[in-house]
Each structure stands twice: as structure tokens, then as C-alpha cells.
Length: 126
Image (tube, rainbow, N blue to C red; front, side):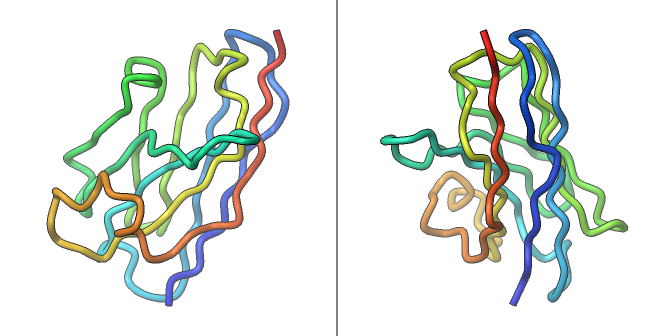
């Protein structure tokens, strides 16, 4: 079991920044690839960024590329999502998730993520 707890969400104006944190406990954090997802009301949960176990390989959805940065600190058992140049359309509940697979091709598949946090609300005002 891996327990994930997100923090750092809140209300921010258009163009502002937030940094989300995802604190992990339980199993060895470095054994999991990590992903950040978001879900707006009435929409499906969307994958926005992934990072592999070592932190050297990342992926971003086109909707956030160039504005968001995913990172991790395995010594602190924490993953991060730095969000800059926020837009009203970024308003969502943001979730972090852990993927135990060693296959990089699985990192973009939502169902491959075994453990999920409870989510943190991000609201961007116009």
C-alpha cells in the first residue's frame, strides 16, 4: 500500500503560480512512477504529467506543456507539480497517483496507476 496526500491547491488569479505537493508513505516511493491528473466538473480525469522512478524522464500533456513542471524528491518521498501561467481552464481537482510498473509505456495509461491521493482543488479566477 502507498498512501498519497496532495497539498498546495487554492485560489489564484490568471497568470499566477501554485506548487502542488504529493507526500507518499507506505512502500518505497522510488519504486513508483508518479503522475498528476486533473478532473473538472462533468469531465473525465485527464493525465497532465508523469515522471519516472528516477525523475529523469517526464511527460506533459499539450495543455500544460511549457507551463507546468513535474518533479520528485525520492529522499523526501514527495512529488511536485509547479504550475505557472495559470489559466481559468486549469481549474480542476488535481490528483497525484503512483504507478508500480517498470514499463514506460504504462505511464500514460490512467488504469495503470494503482494508488491515488484524495485530490486538491485548484481554482483560477479570470
